[in-house]
Amino acid sequence: MSINNNIRNYYEQLVAEEIHRALADRSPQPDMGYMADIACVALNRLPPRYIRFEVDMAFYMTPDELAAISASVRNTVSEAISFVDQHGRDGQET
Picture 1 (cartoon, helix red, strand yellow):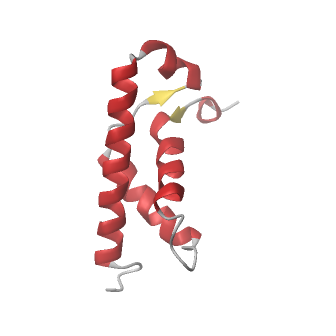
Picture 2 (cartoon, one colour):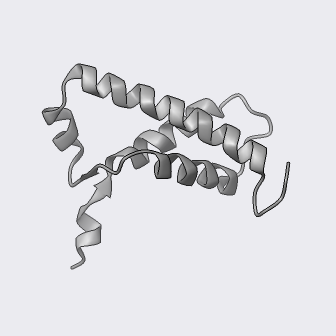
């Protein structure tokens, strides 16, 4: 049994959901590689918060802390989208 199967970064799901929300209106739909690049940039800019269960965060945080995390994720994903758009993918300028 691996410990890796029992822990995860709390921000991963939040970032993935925000990326999908932020890019929902783009046509054509962005590919998975583009979204993965955005996720990596965003996650590297957020502090790691490792948890075993989602309820761990919800139980120990105030509504104000949860709102602050949501705002931070929105801002960070927006900045990550701009960064990836500006710098291109695979070393390519856009």
